[in-house]
Image 1 (cartoon, rainbow, N blue to C red):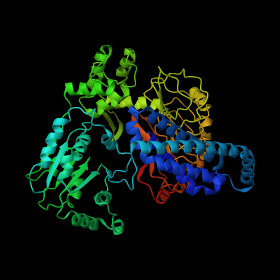
Image 2 (image 1 turned 30 degrees about the vertical axis):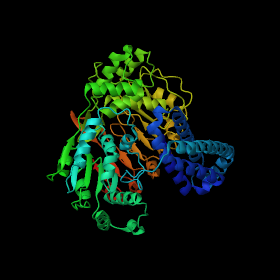
Image 3 (image 1 turned 180 degrees about the horizontal axis):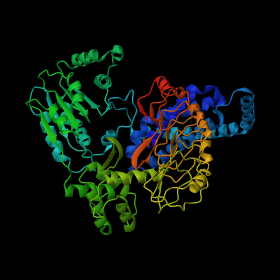
Image 4 (image 1 turned 45 degrees about the vertical axis):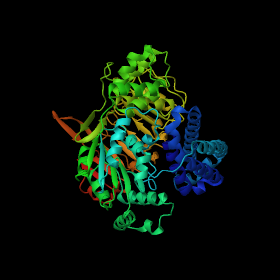
Length: 634
């Protein structure tokens, strides 16, 4: 998670440095230093997170990185909240600027001190990063199809870091796959490895790809992760980069400006008369395979393409040649699953007798998926082996029946739209555990009504009206309510908001028992998402115009029938959901909401739902919505 937190922060710092240079003043150099240092660590963070479970020093270092990133984000958002607010024109506006300038001199000094403290912490963390980088020998890998343009974390990269020792049941499939690759056939041959997610297809193919006999057989080697959102030009450029890295030559500069056809011909020319092995990892569509296939030459000199996919049709479509073959991966046997689980959880082949029963029930939920077993084993390895009740609590937390048969791979749809989805039980437990451990997300339930002061994301589930004493919510960024029996009340919400969550960006009050919006909501300068869906709110006050960063407002299934003219101040608004649902003359009915004149000033709108039509006044305004993608008129 540290890598994603840092990446998000770097984007924020870049925006601040490019758009608010005057506002930053003397802070600019410190902010630039923090950004540069964090940027230099970003690549190493992926590798460190893959290895942290077995290294307490790395765990502590990553914790420090997360904390300094969170603290930087807090200081940054506080700075924007204090100094980037807009003011009215005229005398009142000028007076407001002077008053706030005097008022904020002390605040600016305080933020300057906090920034310098963060700068010093980042410097120390960076020094430790240099030592760890030397110790672990990190190096750039060219496996991602969009590494140059997309730094998003690729979950398949995790499989590339799994050490040889804990792997179980891989020897036989590895030998079979190597045999298929090294068979003495002179033509180009495709081998597709297919199986459901979590079977470690990537891990298996990586072991084959790195095998000495396989390496020796081919002149050129390349590994491309294709993924769902692949870009063909990025894939080809990545392939070219790897091919030139292997021969220790720079990529010709003209490659960068080539179109798709020129890139394809360039690759064909390079591979002419060469024996190559190319891995295409995580292929999701036949179209992706067909596009890449066009650049693969068959020069009758024993080249190989190895493809991994979850989709049987993709595997079949890639193996139409007489020499091609599909290799179907199967889940681990019960014996193999138990061996892997014990190795991962207890660092041995034995399980303590007091935990054997509950351990087998946990293991059953993993359904023989190596990735699942390794992940849940890593979580359980940190638990007290003497505390059987703690393990039983974890099993209960998976959901489903305690016999280990529960699943969470369900989806719920409404009018064709995906509303909710579930996932593997073990993944739910890992996500909740990691989020809690890193103070990222806390779920407040009727049984657990306390949360840490530094919580950043709070989910209120099965709400009880006896929460903890709320002292401070200074780090809170989002609040979501779901799955409750007793609706959240206005009394609790007012008390909650007095905790001063001034950096809050998401407030989802779905189904709350409200007749009006608490006035504290309109002090949330950073608020971007506000949902009052299913509440009893009747009126949107003029104060809504203060929330100038709002991007989404959801007023569906409320009693709001008209919006104030102040809504036009929300120039960043992208989605506006309106309209009530109920009985009208004993029939189910939807009704819309009246909007102010000149609604067309909201030029960033992409979604406008259930606006009440007034042909003479409102309809002509719709032509101003140049970015509109969804429109519903009643």
